[in-house]
Image 1 (cartoon, rainbow, N blue to C red):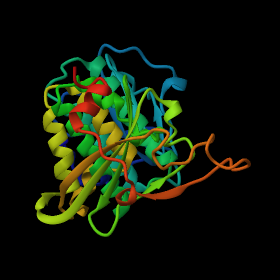
Image 2: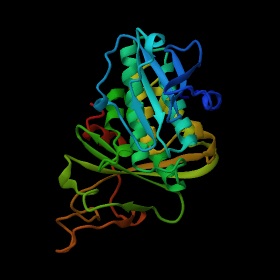
Image 3: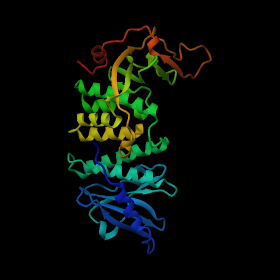
Image 4: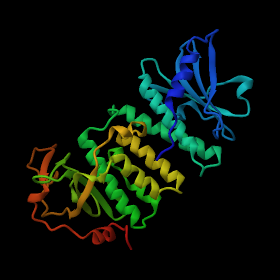
Amino acid sequence: MAPQIDFDELRSAWRALQYESAGAGWRTIPILGGRVCPILAGREFPGNEEAILVGFQGIQRPPAESLPQGQGFLVTCPELGAAGRDRTWIGLARQPGGDLDLFAIMAADVLGTLESRYVSDDSRRFSIFVARIRSWQEFMRRGIPRLLSPEAEVGLVGELQILSVILESGYPVALTVEAWKGPQRGLHDFALDGGVIEVKTAIAGRGFPVHISSLDQLDESLARSLYLAAVRLIVAPSGKTLPQRVDSVRDLLAVHNDVRADFDGRLIEAGFVDSLRSSYARTFEVTSVSYYEVGESFPHLTRNSAPRGVTKANYELDLDLVSHVPKPSEEVLRRLGVLV
């Protein structure tokens, strides 16, 4: 499970500073004592918006244009005078009009990146810290709801299943997480050296309907090889919740801190926020995973096969009505370069 920071402590500190103004400048309170970096809860007056400030040693002050900015938050390098000497301070502040509850969740999550016992260097800590802020930047830019829809929850379970299969095959962990493009809205969910995988997930029932979002998604001419992975689920007490599946992947990445940080950032981009994990109560069991090779005879639409004049399309395909025989998992993984 990802490190959890109590955002109620942050909100209490911000409330205590709310009326501390005695002119322009920063008002701060040290919080989270004993952590690897000094952390302050703060407000900068006259604006009075909530902020967190983290002090890093041994890094140069980054140019303002290199720091991520997002809807609802602002990243700065504040000057704290004598109290902040010998450190470079990075401030993450709520912008006017930004949602305070969401900002507190974000701040607590970002501070959690400082907790890993596997990173002892502030330079690496800073890089991971900023990368997590960039993930939140994408989350807010896309206007993702705080909670995944039931359909998006099912889709993420399926992608995590394929991610686990690749990790457990022995493929390098860094390359595996890097190949996971679904959270970044890639054309396909996984892009590997030997080809790509598009993951479709459904709860068992009548048929296996999948939504194809464009004429390019199942265009085999755009990849060395293209497979559609069909993950079938049932909701059962013996299954695992989405957060439990997230934690299972984290266990596979336990000693790979940079990769774990990359994975956690992609989860945020996918819309999964750790502090809301208790909201996902459904327990899913994977009943089957089938791999279909998409080729000329597989039923699909592409720019070349669509009628003249059709330039955009999204459509539904029922995999239970497809006559093609699924490929064995080992054959697919070898073709994609995962197994040698």
